[in-house]
Image (cartoon, rainbow, N blue to C red; front, side):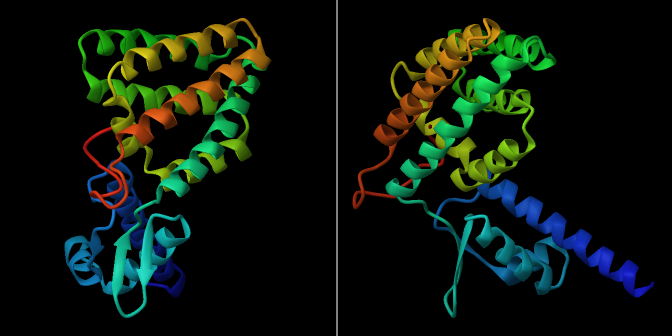
Length: 234
């Protein structure tokens, strides 16, 4: 094997380790604050400890893990302040995305958003919160994709990784009446986008994100009375 080929293989292995660990953290499969064993993960992935160590460094730059010298590596537990700050950025980005999508007119994402809301209506009607949570994530992703702005999309992906959003959205949706209200807010946003009312679409989208944040904060334990984030709720 040439040196170039060997280096490429090493990078490929490292990328796979990073992707798998990132997915586990974002999905909530690994709890906030949980320790991560370099040796155990190396054994699990069938690799040396080097790719795992490098994966830790990358995930730390993404805000997903915390490396404590001579102590260990742990899944990041965001504070309430950090969650608030991240949601403030989420509000700005998604509001801008709604405006940009409204300006584009009839694009494929519009039809995909309509189909998403049809499924969402059905999920809310049967109180299927798990499926509705997935559809919420899809709705927001379609909004970002439909904005057709690569820089906005890149920043958004980084932000959502730091939030570990799939875990948090479940906590928000556990609040009484929140799934139905969330669904109605999505419908209004899409209606304004279809009408090409960018100003109103942005405003309503930002209000929607603020409402989600309030529901999330209401569902988080009070500091000092338990873990900050509950990976089983949203």
